[in-house]
Length: 613
Ligand code: M6R
Image (cartoon, rainbow, N blue to C red; front, top):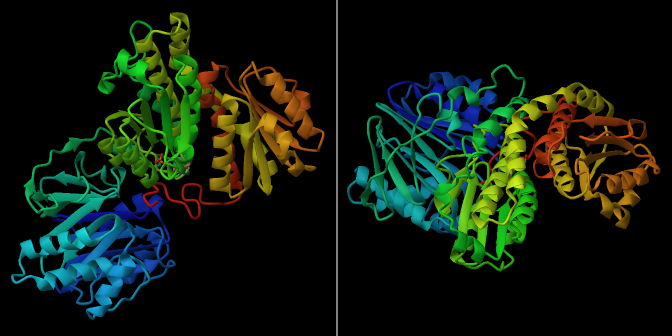
């Protein structure tokens, strides 16, 4: 939700900010804007629409300043318009501010400021921030850098909600202040330049050294120096972290879209996620988790909590953990978990999954689980992300940056990592036969090659996409582990093709939804689990007899004349089958979106990282 970028250094800020915005555009794309410190004060150029529109604004070419802030918006308060675009300024135009997050008490603050003579140009929650900074700044006797810092701090203490904020001021032409609370913000550093961004990939081509701020820590930036303060404005030390991601990983590298590139990166993502943790010679090693046999034996329930695709990976995780470890696993949507007074205590282990590590609902659910006394493990793809800083322990998928809004390689990497975690628990608990453990490990190591083989379905999928891209409704069916993949296939189709779709446990169809099956409707089924295949085929027969068009994704030899299209993929054990069976569904959603001429990487109304509740 919204991308913010900032630069302070020796070069012209504008081109760097625009490049950053283009890379962050997947976070929001309904308007964009920029403010720099120029010789005659603060510049402000902003407009409704994509970053391209901002780039083509003639005023952009006049910006010479070496310090600036910029924003790409995903509207929360106020429709997309020039007035509602960021940056926002205070009434005296001393401060320019960009903000990602939501100010929940903005109306109250706005009323207070209006009573004090301030006026507002936009309907946004953000516009209270520069005015509130101005309000506190004016109260200071001395207008020095400390007064600037104090005004920003006082403003932030008044804000309820989430925010990542960058502030520049015409009165402090060599500085920028940044702060965050429950919204992402990273600071990239090199000798005489500082780069600020909502996420790492947008600035990875400039530096690999990053500072991560905790909630309500303030960074006062100059081009050669960064000073950090806590909320009492006491100076604090912060280490830098070196990020190993390759800068080219955040480029399209010849692919038409990031989503297609990321689908094809899955063999590498899985290989990297497995790393050296899985081998037939030794036990699966997650020593960073420090879990003992006594502790695991005391756990009476595991919760897996996440949103969207990450939650679907959690469903695959439940399947393998329950089967191998015989501990009940409940999978919950983070936004629901938080509000239903969940039964969580010191005997509950809570696992939180988030590709970005910045999803507001997941972070809030994690804080709640900690308060209830549960141990918490974060699974994320982003080192230093908020969720990893909140959790007791963190483990990582190594999928590399995922830029497309539709998650693909993160999902398959999460499923692999959950299988690895299940193996690790099972080996500690010593309750599973070594032959089964070794078989899972062997199959896991074969996955990258089998994913490559699965890509050979591309042409058939592309042809099928041409046949169904104008459909209004599509159904996905599966049983057991295959149902979890049906859910993911359905979500992928909805979000990037805008086709309404539903996923059902195949056996549940006859309890109501079959009423929706009519002549010509498309039903896509996943048939990987051999123990359930006959049952699911019977359910498919039921929709065929009501006129449905059928596509089947399977590793088994099916009667191909029964179905309209059979996508044959390599076989593996059921625990790992989602990693292969989801690939045709990812490709199908992709090619349908292309047939419809849609923006695959930036679907309407969505943003990659959902940092608002
Ligand atoms: O970054 P996270 O894994 O926490 O994101 C969770 C969901 O917002 C995300 O998976 C979303 O459902 C994707 N757009 C699905 O493709």
